Length: 95
Length: 494
Image (cartoon, rainbow over the protein chains, first blue to last red):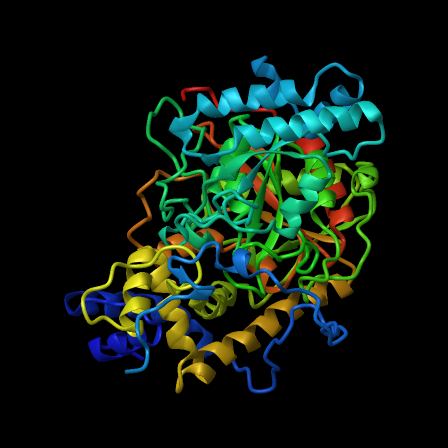
């Protein structure tokens, strides 16, 4: 399976990472080197094998459905690049 | 005073109890050593005020009696741990300026036990790397040099700053994290001890996530005894991490008897790699002889799916990373790109992530995105999860057949020169060939310094234990450490 320029562009888009047009061929080459390495996995027969869900067999713990935390608006916003009037601020999303 | 920094945790603990030294004296000695070691690039955020304040509090607590073992011990904390009010940026530009409002569970447990944080330690960006070269701060440097050469060597990665700092006696010990070998490989490259606990032993809460099903925090120390002491202080159940095990943590130090008579040590034939340096092979044979001399039973074993571990890892780890790192979007914390007129929310995300992540992180996030994308999910991600089941099954089989621990080399070579493998990601990935299986199977692993190569560089062996049996693993490591008698230290050039 070989990754072309268009696939590289699509992956970058899905990952929300801007890649300049001129850098796409090099990126596709890098993907191909890494995927070539991963390709060995196709040699194995895994038809009757269950995919691993958890490395340690355990039931996820349950907790009571109650509010255990909150009222920390200032702490939550303290590291925001742009916070205004108690909210995170971003460029206009809807016209 | 400079000799104070050479103390082990156990030695300092005993000296503190006897009143032979104070935590303030120890801390001042470490702070002076750190200030004189900027050439190593190990400490990237120094916290002398916090350190001295905690040292004074520790001295009061020790005088009052009944202080925990870690009380008053100066340590370094990997930059991956969130530390309240102190920069915690995972060596990434995208977390520039981030000062957490909270403390990670593990660093919080150390703090509450009275340990003294000296500062934050260098690492590969988001713990993605094996040479510490992907760090936004620039690389850390190995205090060891080959023969008479001046060439700068890598301290390994991703916990390269932690390894360099402990090996150079800038601190008594340090925290590390290990997703594919990031504690054990740098420990082996710098002649120190590194322990990766069983998955679920140490809380992941407050540690910047890379690959959640593989990440574990652990101690990086000068001796196995210190790993037992510090490890116990870092581990334990945490309700804030849903994968944290509700199991008591035994007194690991009390389990260090050095008596390993009758223990069965497995030697996996698949770890004998083509092109492995003769010195590594010889070291492995010596390790096997040392354990046999101590009364262990050596058994040849097979872990047939070993060769598939690295490709499996390089599907699963990037897949989880692409999901974990989706949170860095320039909205809630850290770096935000400058936007052009008319740019909207999509440009905000795309520019912030392109500028904020370094090349290796961008590469892994995109590989992860690809293997999870529609049409490839089954071929790559699900297949890798199935192979992971087979890899874990290999280990279960040998443990069920009576093997107590497995001995392997820790790394395929001694520390290499900075820059040597940086341009070839796949070559760099091969560094993890002996360690990555342990993360995939969720097992505890221990790197023990065992010898020097012809150029005088340290080499380590790895012991792999049964789940939750860190105590037994440390005891076998202790026997190996005693037999190897590794005491070499790097010549100070910095």
